[in-house]
Amino acid sequence: MINVAQVSTTFMPGTPFAKNALKDVSFAVEEPSFVAIAGRSGCGKSTLLKLIGGLLQADSGSIEVESFLMGGKQRSAAATAALVAMAFQNPEHQFFAETVREELSFGARNIGKSQREIDRAIREMLPLTGLNDSYLLRSPFELSGGEQRRVALASIFLMDTPVILLDEPTAGLDPVGRRRICAMVKTMQRKGKTVLWVGHDLPEMVSLADRLLIMAEGRLIFDGAPEKISADKALRDKAGLLADDFDLDAVLRENYGILPASDAYLKLKRFFTGEGD
Ligand SMILES: Nc1ncnc2c1ncn2[C@@H]1O[C@H](COP(=O)(O)OP(=O)(O)OP(=O)(O)O)[C@@H](O)[C@H]1O
Ligand SMILES: [Mg+2]
Image 1: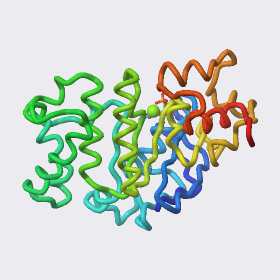
Image 2: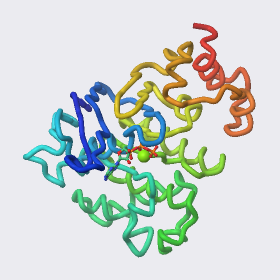
Image 3: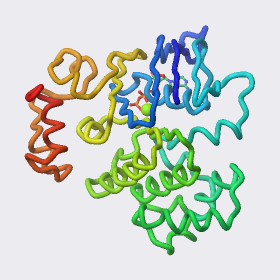
Image 4: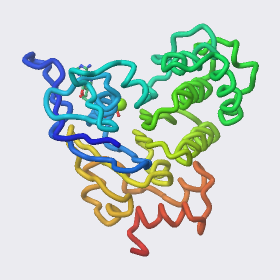
């Protein structure tokens, strides 16, 4: 589905500000799955998503989505849009339309759907977002941060692409807002989509992900099942994931409503402590 092969890229090459943002990054996603991507601020996560989404071109290496070469010479915007949809780190950067209905319709119309089909899809989608009909005629710019994220995600989902890229989709939201977003993403997972989720909140991502990628300074330093790095404290420190006084039980209970002995709790506990391996 996704094949990233030896990708490197440098911003502003040949200037004093040159930044080698990705260094020889390779990984492949063979089947529909949920991949979480973590790592310190500035390590290259958004750059990687933009490359996969065809918004940037790598200096070297190649990126294929469903055997289509992204950023390649034969690249066509329409073909790219049918394969990958991306939610940006700041949803307001994604908006341009005067109403939520128009915002939701644009991408789907671009890939050839009729307004009738789109309106039907919007009606089906709305309950999932927790928004109602009255939002459709409002300006997306005047919504709350959480509402904006849900509209942004809904517009991505309506494009119905096999690959969905989410850049920090829950950043800045309260626990209820985060749970809503997680529920929307889980629905996509059930529909067989491949989701790449970039974020800083490891417990949240691990509770959803089949696979975890960790980046540091432009390199991929871990790729595997989340449970695998449980015992590797040095790796966790390198990736800047957890403070030493991190109280897992309290975080899970208070922020996520995850109770001890639930499946999600046991999975996370294993991840952080290595117990039960
Ligand atoms: N358009 C650009 N021009 C110049 N440098 C850039 C550009 N975009 C990103 N960079 C630099 O490349 C590096 C990686 O940036 P990127 O946005 O991918 O990081 P990130 O992992 O998404 O960080 P965060 O978690 O803060 O969102 C950073 O040092 C950043 O300053
Ligand atoms: Mg980023």
